[in-house]
Image (cartoon, rainbow, N blue to C red; front, side, top):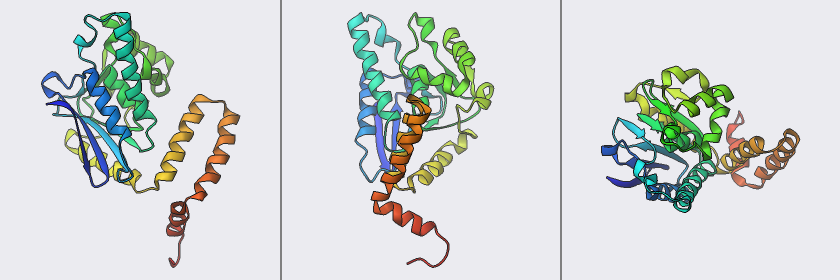
Length: 250
């Protein structure tokens, strides 16, 4: 129990937050370790799954002691490391999946939103309780309104309350809602599916999502044309098309 555990298994990198005795509450050094685990994924890693140890929590968010005696300078340092960790996840060239197995609060909720996809069970509870501590929800909390709309995002952030997934199931926060016993198999199946596609198309498609979110419509369309053409520079693209075509394979 300590720093997140990083383990590679058949092309899938597992990053497990490993402080179950405190509901996998995160220390700043945990964030650095997660970011490094995401960034260091080599070509043998085709997808990344993030989860929490045990069955009680994905993570309860930042340990409250992190900000107990904070100054503006130390708070800036800590939140910058949060930003860098979440950015590493969101901008990873590999597909990222959050296997949410319990409480998912604060920065952990933001971490799940930063992932490409989320698998959870119906009793999971999400929340951004920062306002109850007198601090704002920041960084990737900005993504929340893309999932639930501005009105619901304001409710979740301004109340600081916890929301069972069954009350948010229609919002798209979770891509798959399954029984707790099916979480791991479902996440693995999805990771293996995404990992079976060419790395080049994953990089291209994920990059386009960022372009579409952060730039105007015409810029997104024009960039799409360039990205589409560029993938044909890779032999893997030609091979994938050849394998997909019906008829005899050469």
